[in-house]
Image (cartoon, rainbow, N blue to C red):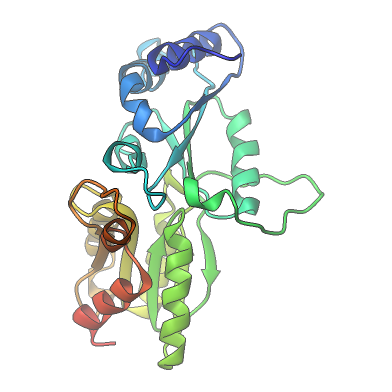
Length: 272
């Protein structure tokens, strides 16, 4: 359905359709515009199954574009998937590869819960192998994109590729980094992260959104609570600078995490 540009109505119609027995897929042009529909997402979609004591379910998929780097300025370059991951009743997918995007989307379409499916704008041009055979990827199952024994780098969405770049730089120094792509933020696969940290004893968590209030804080606190004795130093966090996204390309790039900042965080916290 081609709708008017009214995100509250678009999502509200999706919620109503889901309550009526359909399995709608709603598309919002960017996650920035989801703010206009946040009441429908947070207060309706996420809560109706609980508030109806299971009499209703809301099998709704909300596709949207997240992230910066495209010089779209402050109000069109934000990453709010971490916000939505804090809401009970919602699930949040943040794929980094074509393989993961398809597998997670197939799983999302079968799920009886509302799902925010956040696709990074700079990943649409990425190519990758996708098998002809049918497959799905369960929510809450991280993927180890690169194995290593010296340090763990936890990331998601586009930052997974930045983490892999940092891992390649570390290899030149004789260090082997393990790169974990979370793939979903709610639920998130803490078991895979903790197992890796207990092996490497060093960890940095990377995400594009602002460091203040970022999901990396949730991951870091979980590591601190459940794997403290395995750490050789404090959990490192790398996030976006706490500024509105600049329109100027050079300034915008400076505000977004890169591989050099990951290396510096590891050097500051662990001396590597």
